[in-house]
Image (tube, rainbow, N blue to C red; front, side, top):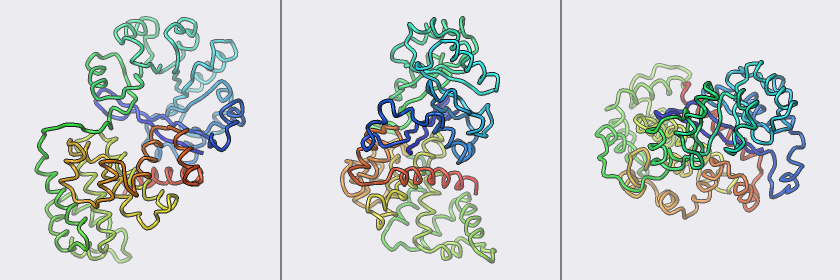
Length: 407
């Protein structure tokens, strides 16, 4: 099984929901699954399994989760498969669910059970035909490139006043800014929030300079624990976070100094904690999804290390994933951002040019995030990687991220 979470944003760049995009089989190894076989066992909905096994709080921090449904799975016993609150699940239908009596009655039944409903992949000329189904929807996903929002806003405002409009394929910051300025959409989905920074003349805030100094201290070979402690002590939030974490780890708690805490952790663990904690602080003025993506990429890269025969490079892969959005964090092109933060040449090569021994892991993670399952399947075949181990690594990364912020 493969699964990833795609965020949906509001017009303030806050994440309001996630979509689960999943694939049950490796299509390159089981090509029949791309045909009619893909419906084998369709009554067992992958997205529902994931929510039920992991918990909606671990997955989405209690936000709504959109679950893909098709013309077979819509008749599944959804209540038995997933115990999550009905109003947190948005059943995402598509044009395979046609406006015929059996489908309309099933959609009404789901609506009566308080599930939320959404529909996508409808053409404009289908809106009238699908009226019995659209009228039951909470959301409709629209390709903003194929429809004028002024017309859509007027049409849906009159015909379906309670439906929320979601713009999909928003693939640039310019598109997002334009759409939010025009108004009309409630949610936005696309890669706009993580497009690389190409050019910027903004100065890095003084507080971030202090954090960058700390990163550079611990990313030096055989760095000085005392020097790291001195920099940590300049920031109250880091001091409190460090002491709380180390006191939880020790049997006889009572550590009350940064130097003592640093010594207890040792170089390796202190370095990992600082890189993680400082990245969280650096992201404080960025959209929350940037923090989440940075940390999940870091842990996912670390977990993937043995699958890519790089078990000895877990620390480097963790750091590569963590800094893979450094351009977004510092609002500077990646080349300039990495000039400020000292990292090894393999990490630089991966982040700047997509080359070197670490680059294949980063490329795999990026394809996985996009739910590009055909390319992910190809890479797994080339690397002889077991699909279920990749899924376990991703889910483990989600849980680790949740625990990180629950501590």
